[in-house]
Image (cartoon, rainbow, N blue to C red; front, side, top):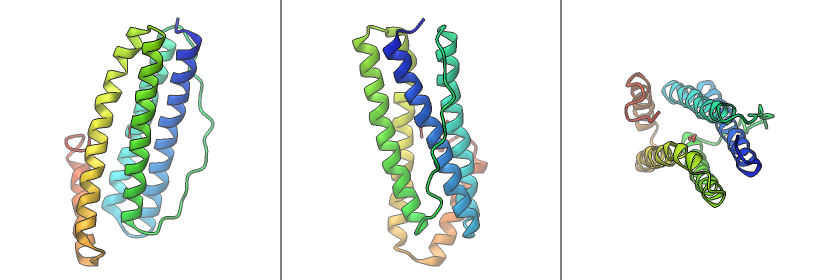
Length: 171
Ligand code: OFO
């Protein structure tokens, strides 16, 4: 059984992963409504990935004899100024998630729960990949400088990332 502090911290992370999933779903909806179908499909897929991150933690908590709690869902923002603003927000969100994962690892380490520390290494690695992915996407968008024709090409490229599966998109 997990100690109370670790259980509470893992349930907080479950909430954050669930919120990430909801946030990317709202962004996907905005992109679809605004004609960015490639970006929308990429974000729908990413929303599913975040749910899988949430479930991985969820099962871990229960497998360790503790109690995973279904998070209440905070309503994410549904309106965005541009595709660029969407990806800026995602990048900042992922940087925040990385900090939270690091804090979580810190708690497990202090509590001498080395099994959970070990389990969380997957998330540490995942965050490196996610930050890299979104910083690359943002760099590309910055290069476009608001050019509509190039934005159309960018959107097609996002569609290719979806059909390429998890390769280059991260798990
Ligand atoms: Fe976007 O990453 Fe989950 O953990």
